[in-house]
Length: 428
Image 1 (cartoon, rainbow, N blue to C red):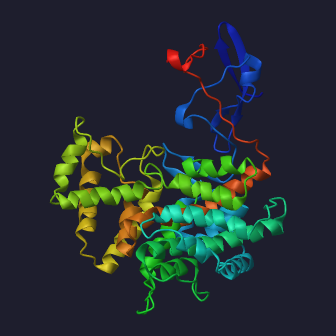
Image 2: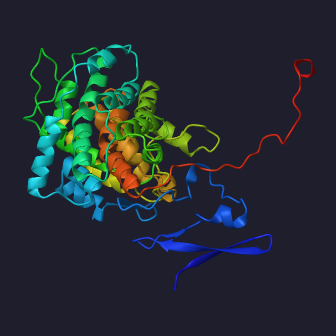
């Protein structure tokens, strides 16, 4: 017997089917609400209780602290797979065989060269431009060099577009970094793996030999995996809704980059470091700021603690905490800001106030301090997030197009003026 929900308005009852997900989540299907009720809609600011789609990619249970991609636990993926393996899983639905993985990696490397005309575009940006703005523009510009629309129904056509984007996106990100730092533009090195290449392109300079740190590479690889997909967040929803108009893959991803740029989304890890720097400038008194965070009359808030979705410990934070500890031990850093971060973490994890409210350090807290330890400037944190999130955006775009989802078009509740007469200039 199918499950139903009954809505009663002004004495009239309306029945709507209830759908059940793989993990027994329930959703009331209100596709016919407006038509059967004569125009009534639901109102859900921020879409906190609204499912915009059905998806097979990511399962997230905020209350239990569960995150899975295609049925695989995030804890197992970060331990046993690398970034590109998880990317393949998210985009195409299954983990790659050894042969598929080797071909995937090689095809991506073949696409890591950028058209030299892209330099004309990046030359047009001032040095003070934010790297996220540069990245969004350069990603959109890829459409000019790849004008054909992606046929998602063609396995070959879609695969080719995927390797183009995965191959070129990190180069665009590295060039955005170089532009803002005033350093030469680097190219990929096909003898390196995906994550090693990111490190090399970001930090190698012509006057010095760049030495790869395997512990740093491992930490970045795990962090990138943790960023790959996170269900229908702001940037992912943006990619899907842009793609629903049949906008190209490159343009849709560019829209996702712009959405990720916001301080409340991808900029959260940058906000963490800015907070830590403010504490350091104020003398480094962590207890003072802990007390301020507890004071309901104080506007100060600890950045990087708690999560909108996870009502328990962020499972990604549990994983990346270990990578952060290993990295700091290896680097032996004396950075006072990172020392404040570690002190803040220790105090908050032991304090009853934070434990009672489940205000645990989240992935943004750890990602921010890892990026700083690796040498990335604060303005590059969100760019690194974008590189990690790219496979999720691609997989979600593909799923939306294959499902033939209709163009996104939310409704609204109008609260402006009722009909009124037009006034001439003399009457205004």
